[in-house]
Length: 103
Image (cartoon, rainbow, N blue to C red; front, top):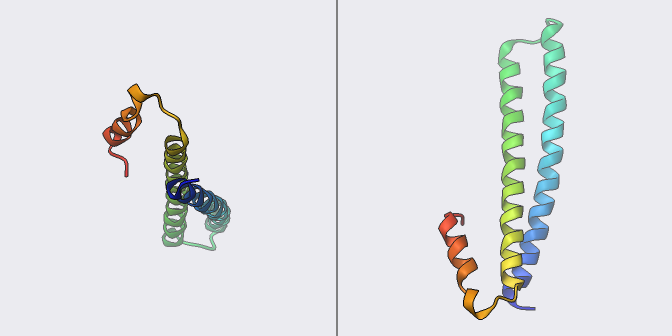
């Protein structure tokens, strides 16, 4: 196995763990939002705390989305680096990947 493939596998594993932790954080933020809204409706909270909780929830969802994107990019790179391409298409995948503008 080449160093590139090993690196891709390690990155894929790391991104999977990052997704799992960001998923848990998003779920925790959702529960916090529900609790904050219940406190607000009961008159035990104000709008400022609701806005803070909503911001935290949005940030958690954004982190989860980024983790999914990064995982998919690494998975595509792993597929690309382990594929056996016909001679005619040897550079075709690289050209298409570079045209996307993704890192």
